[in-house]
Image (cartoon, rainbow, N blue to C red):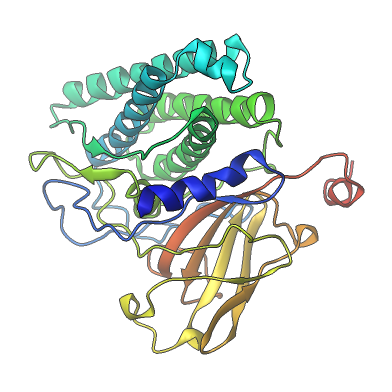
Length: 346
């Protein structure tokens, strides 16, 4: 059952082990009206773990803004439901200070303000505006609500990092950048102050394409209004299952449906780890084994990591090379650990 699997994985959000957002097998219609074939995006930068290819000309600014608005609707629904379910007393009973819930009220207000801004810009453009979808966040307690919020904010920062490249009207960038920075600050507050984990993963956010983001968002979207206009995302990739025992340097058995890919066997595929400091590629142990050895912390596998199955290691991870995923993971780290300090010399 999806909810049970999701909650099992979320148990790792509060530990020093990895945590993961499992991918559901649900197939959903992300947008109401089709915008045609998928578009692919240009390379972002050599220092980040970007995922674009060159053809972004067919994506309109309205589609990018409606994509952002769709994600903001998801966040507002999540925070509204969660805060309605958990009072200040519930937060206190779970061991969290009163200020924690008060700050979540502010985060909800931020996300609602983002919606108002995006809607007003779309109205000025004379564009159709997406409406809320129907969502399923499963049955959660206060701790898993906090864990999910950390994931939503981190993924939100990656979404805005990736989508900003698609905007043709450069006057829209300041507003998009402001929302991005707020999402990142909220993520930092949750991870460091509330969860007592590392506040960041490295020097860069990991930008993801709209389709990669919706591969993650599809876990929570049940259906969207058929009248919704097109958005920058066109589909979700097949999911990747990763066990909660995953750890840097460990041999991990992944699960995904090879039949949903164009590969004849695993020898044609690779595992890509998108990290704050670059992309790491690994091969499967054999052509008939779903086992892969995860990189070590010394190789850069720490903090937020997005795991994908790809068909090439000779170019940036794009929608063209993505076969399955991403699945987001978090590998918490201690900045005072000598091995971690060696990765970030003064």
